[in-house]
Image 1 (tube, one colour):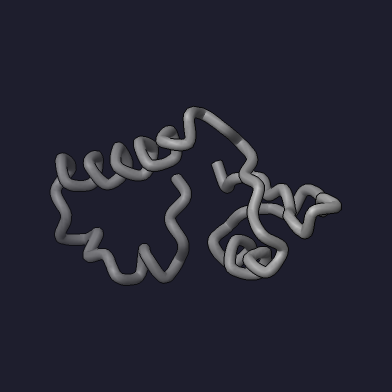
Image 2 (cartoon, rainbow, N blue to C red; image 1 turned 90 degrees about the vertical axis):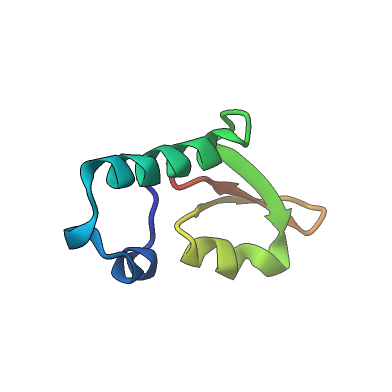
Length: 73
């Protein structure tokens, strides 16, 4: 659902009830949809490494020192 391993490691999933777990999933999906359904994002070239570590996938380098990144889901 787009959670990074370090985020998962911080959660106490074993003690979480079904409703709380479903809320986590809904919140993550709602966050992704806040980009109006976009599957790509244009970012400054200097931020590529940060976005890669967040699960984005590099798509293309633009001539204006920007990059297109594919969103993780």
